[in-house]
Image (tube, rainbow, N blue to C red):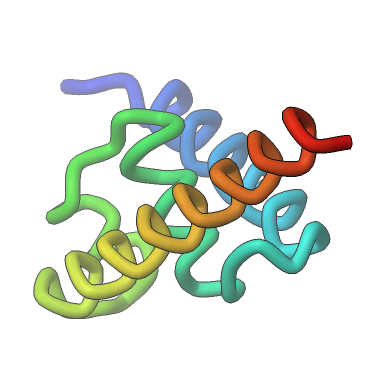
Length: 84
């Protein structure tokens, strides 16, 4: 039987990271949750869908939007660092 304690800890950590991302106004709350679970903590899309009670297609849409928004935010930071 798999140890759910580690999985629960990963989910809790990912959701804490998501809260931090939202506080920076870089991405929406739901995008942050999906991004943190999938990208930062390596939780699969199917499991993310179950954890967040979303369809897998919705998870994919949020992940794509989050990636785009994070990339744009990083590009802006890079630009500001090189000009400022």
